[in-house]
Each structure stands twice: as structure tokens, then as C-alpha cells.
Length: 258
Length: 108
View 1 (cartoon, one colour):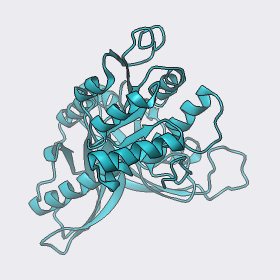
View 2 (cartoon, chains in turn yellow, green):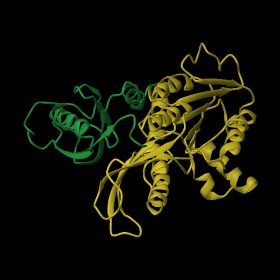
View 3 (spheres, chains in turn red, yellow):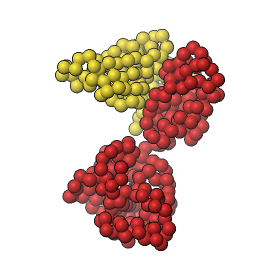
View 4 (spheres, each protein chain N blue to C red):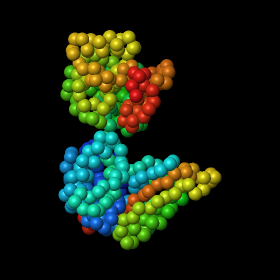
């Protein structure tokens, strides 16, 4: 069991995602016992005491779904090839969500502070050193200075990445959006007035032939509809929207998305 | 940040058996979510929380038994009992808590 605990600690240290499946209930026909386990990481079984091959395959498949949903759950199984039934608890050990804040202006400052409270791993990116620096962002995990769209190319983006485009103008937001719109990010939000966003999306359709369903992934105007007035309130509405997307909530987005 | 498994490992390294209690399913309103955990030691010491109050005391008692027998069990915690109580731990829901013994030599 020590090796399993070690493996779990290591996963946390690396910031990796994994699922620990534990049999919590079983009848006598299935050949498994409560307490038996199986640790799944990167689609493979890494450790554990469950030996039934068919059950392991079923667990692998379910683990993938659990990880995608980021929700731990108790799941009943018919054990393949037997009359037996088992209940398996899937504990999701999620990779910590990563927030990339593009544009280090007046909204970014409260946004990064609040994001750290929410346990995001936060990267701030701007092309101006006088904005993207430690004095303004003491809590940020990473501060990058350089051409924003160019720098985004070099950043690893996963299904646990949330990207907030709040640069000083559409001239900068658009090339950044073009860089990430086809990627696997869980959330992409872009600031701007309805009119400018509409124009931007029209250019994407006409000139770049970007498919409608790809464009529809973008949360723009960014944030939840809470009638924000100050930069701090806007930051809050943006972060609330990322949580809505992560957890599957029903609050009203300014973009009209469900 | 330390996880509950860092704490589990410390006890295992000392040769102790501990019980890991996990909320595996809930119905109605409960103080904590599915997946919340606490560790109970052989002396009844608690690390982490599954919501506090009477429910936690029941789980602690069962956990000591689980450590003694080294057999896991699921405990149903009913928070419906005393809805008029002022205790913040009374939420009105039901939760199933799986209590699992961990010790060093146990396989995976």
C-alpha cells in the first residue's frame, strides 16, 4: 500500500491528473473484494490490486469519463463474464487548472489575485515589461514578457487550461485568439464590446474560414452577467464564468452561452 | 501542498494502520461533497473533515473498528435526524461513507 500512497503523492507533486478506483461493494460471485484498487494515469493502470482483466478494462473506460467530467462518483458494474456485481468509487485527482491571462492591464491585477485564491496556476503574459512584472503580480506563478501571440505558441495548452484575453485592444486580442482557437483549452474568453466582437467573428468566418462551432467556443463578451462596473467586478465575473464552465453551472453568460 | 496521502504515508511508514473515510455518495443536502475525505488513526485522531458533527463522530467510531478488523465497510450517515437542532452540522441529507483500512504491507 505504501507504493500506492507514494504514487499518489508523486502525481500531486507533478501536477498530473489521475483516477483512483476503489471497490466499495461486491457480491460473492464477482471475484473482487471491497478495498481492492486500481490507479489510472495517462490511460494506463499504474498500480493496484484488482486483477480481473475485463473489470479493469471497464474501469479504464469509466476513469476516462470521470476525468473528463472532473467529478468523483460511485459507479455500479456488472462484472464481465460472471454473475457478479460490484460498486466502484472513482476518485478523480485532477490536474490543477491553469489560467493564462493575456494582457496585464487594470483588470489583470485583481483577476490574478482572485485566481490564486481559487487555486489556479496562473501565467500572466504581456508585451510590456512595465505592466508584466513582479511588483504588479506578486502572486502569479509565471510572468512572461514578449509578443503575445508568438509567446502563446510556446505555451502548453491542455484540457485543463483556461485562457482569458484581456489585452489593451482588439489589435492584440485577435491574433492571440487565432493562435489558440483550435487548441484543446477548456475555456477561452475574450473581452470587448458586442460590436467589435461581432466584427472580429465575421472576419474569422469570411477571411479565415474558421468553422462556426469553433468560433462558438469563445466566450465573448467575456464573463457572467452581473452588471459589473469596476475592474475588480469584471475580474470576478470572468473567474465566475471559468468556474461555471469547469463545474457545469447554469448562470447567465454575457455571451449568451449556456 | 500536502495531500491527505502525504499524511497516510507518514502513518504507514511508522507501521500504523489508518482508516481513510471517503464520502462516496450523497442524497439531499450534506455538509461536504462526494470525494471529501478524512483519515482516522487507531487512537481515534482525525485528520481532514467530512463535515463535522454527529456524522463524523459515527464515522470515527466505525473507523476504529475498521482499523482493528482491517476490513473495509460502508457507513450510511443520516443527517435527517434532528432537523430542528441548531448545530451547523445538521443539513438534512444522507451520505454514504466508505471506510478503508490502509497499512504498509497491504497490496495496492
